[in-house]
Length: 317
Image (cartoon, rainbow, N blue to C red):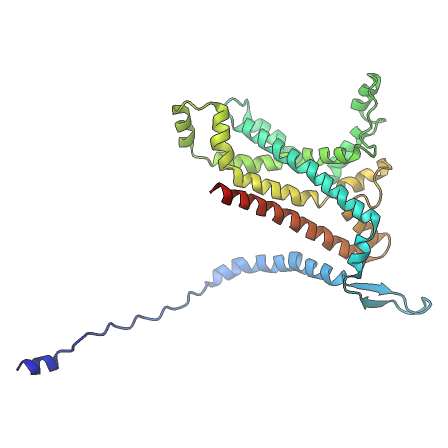
């Protein structure tokens, strides 16, 4: 009897097979929203980079005695060799690195100080000053350079005229000072923009942290050093990377100031050199190689800075 019962009862109940998980498919609305960005990103960012890379590996040569049609020849890295063997272009790269070393610390420090001042409880009319500091960013770069150009020329600058009457001889467009004058224009135009980024990070700090600091008797400097600066550090890094990339795009300011001084040549910056090769010398292939070199330099600086910051974070932990 017991055997019959055992035979009719299964020894073990096998678990039911788990239902197969269906792959989640993105709804059509997501593709409708994402596709325009993908198309625009590919058309206006990826495609120009690929086109510049391709163009930099070709050159145009005239056939025979110049009577035939010009011939496009694949030269691989010859344009890069020509660019890096040009002393004027190499000097412009060094000048660009110096400009970045001058502007990046000044930009980050100025934006951070302005943001901290407006975020402090003692600031008078913070909204008014926030608009005043940000308003130079709304001025186009060409217009801003023209405005500062009038202040840099002694014949039209009331400041330089007053300094001349006081016996101070100062030429902002001299060969030794023009780079600092250009840095001043960039600082005036973009410090307010970076200040807004840092202020957004400061406004995101929970007020409970400030209350706890007051309860513990922390001073204003201690609050800035131990609460504000550590919490806005990601935004400071972001501003630094943006400034590094922006300095490597230096073009408008020296181009507009060039008619006002002899200290700025057609190869003063790498972008000016590439512009001159493309539209004055009729050599777009060499200009593309110069542009790619500047892009690689910008990537190396940005990636190197982020790598250095991440390494310091890992050591801190």
